[in-house]
Length: 244
Image 1 (tube, rainbow, N blue to C red):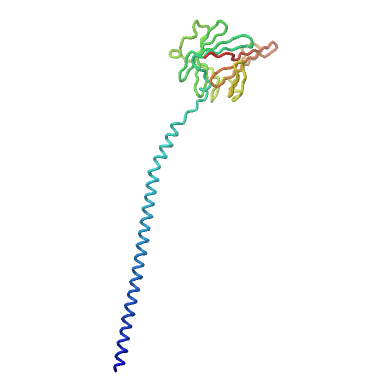
Image 2: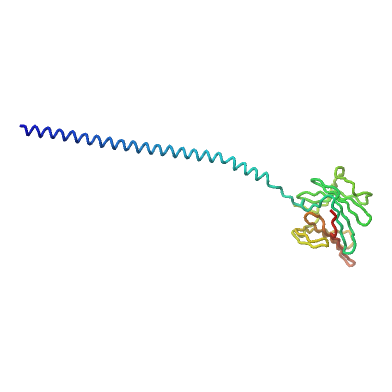
C-alpha cells in the first residue's frame, strides 16, 4: 500500500516537472521570436530612415547642380562669327601694287553694328560704311569724292536700301570661294582667311573678276582684279603697312 502511494506521488511529481519544463521552453521560444521581430522592425525603421535621409540629401543637392548648369550657360560666350575679322578703330592700312602705295584705308569709327572707313585712292577720298555683325558683312553706305572722309557719320547716315553683301551665313552678292586659307602678303602671314569673288560686266564684251581676302583682326588684306577678253589685264593691291 505504501509502495503504491509512493509510485503515485513520484508519478505526479514527474508530470509537474515535465509541464514546467515545457512552459519554460515555450516562454523562451516566445521571447526569442519577440526579440527577432523587434530587431527586424528596428532594422526596417533604420533602413527607411536612411533611405529618407538619402532622398533628402539628393533633393538638397539638385538645386546646386541646376545652379551650376545655369552658371555654365550664362558664362558661355556667343559666337563672334565675322566680328573677329573687323579691323580696329584708328588703324590705317596701306596697300601696295608691288611698287607704290595705291590705296589707304583708315578705320574712322565703329559701334556694335557698323564700321566706317575712309578710303584714299590717289588724291581722292571716299567714305564707306559696312554693316559688320557676327553673321554678315555688307557695304550699306558709300560716298565718293568727299572733302573730308574722317567725319564720323555713324549717328547720322541712312543705310542704302540695297546693300552689297560680301560675307553672310545665308546669301551674298559675293561668292565664297574658300575659307580657312593661309595667305602671305607683304605685311606678313595670315591664317583662317576668307576668299570671296564677284564678277561684273562693267567692261564691254568682257568680265571683270574681283577677288578679296579677309583676315581675322585686319579685315581686307588683299584684292585682285582681272578683266577677261582679247585686251584683258589684271592687277592687285595687298597690305604692306599697318599704322595702329
